[in-house]
Length: 117
Figure 1 (spheres, rainbow, N blue to C red):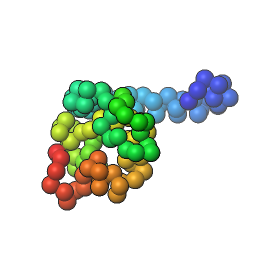
Figure 2: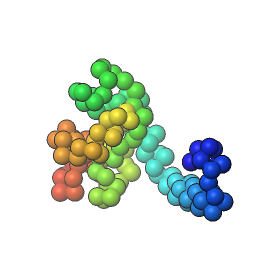
Figure 3: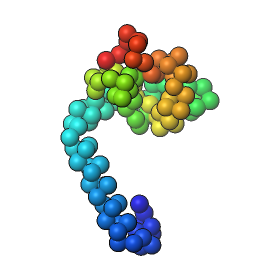
């Protein structure tokens, strides 16, 4: 929420927003393995986007910004670095918006697949 939105909001909305923000921070603090996963995946990729999707990523080698779980955590994926790939923000959005195409490129591993942790 932006400051300008806070000024226009009611005190009840502001308190609700603050409660949600604290909840997110506490949840993130409980997952130190996620921070280690992020750092390890970035180091494996050397900081560069590993997707290189034509028409999505910029041409050539470019920096990434997101650690992506190839087998999604909701599908039983782990925070093991072998389950990760380093993507730019645009490629990461594309992967989640186009799961079938991402699976064909090896950027998503489904529950029945043998690959990834």
